[in-house]
Length: 258
Image 1 (cartoon, one colour):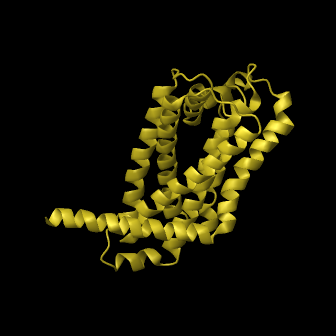
Image 2 (cartoon, one colour):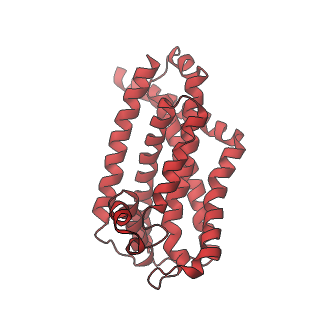
């Protein structure tokens, strides 16, 4: 009985923190706009400025770059989470929460869940724009469910990594540097050009970093409605990053809060 009551209170605490983070996101319209506008502008830039000059094996360029743009969109939203976490730490909000009878895990979990919701909204907008400018996926219902599952795993993984950045950064400006990682890594992958066109050293890095198998898996499911050899590495990268980042974030949070 006591355990069920404890679980119910923890769920309510997470729901309260989740609502708080969503309200903060709605009040920070500039950050929300940046999370949406940057990937959209990048897609328009690449499709209409560079698309005609880039050879991606005969595939329509807009079809080719959608997975990479989606991952950049998710990364941009994660930067907002890093800044929000850092603001809570620096302004003493975390100390105030610790003085209240609430579940310790609810603060970070609320930030993570609100980040997933922001990601879902912005990703949907990016896909909608892609459809307007010529994106034509061949995926069926089953493939879309698999894609959604992979993206949710990636959203959670990159969100918990951003939480670590927010916890260890000395300022909100430092926390915002997380955007450099999330923006550059998709470029250094197969997100915008084929890895065969890269110099040897860069190609080795591009083919062995997490973004490439995730992008290739999503692209194969979208355009060919099949799972290629990158599926298992993509899942392993997402799950591995999520587990390590979650454990690391909790440990750092407990140390900082104490």
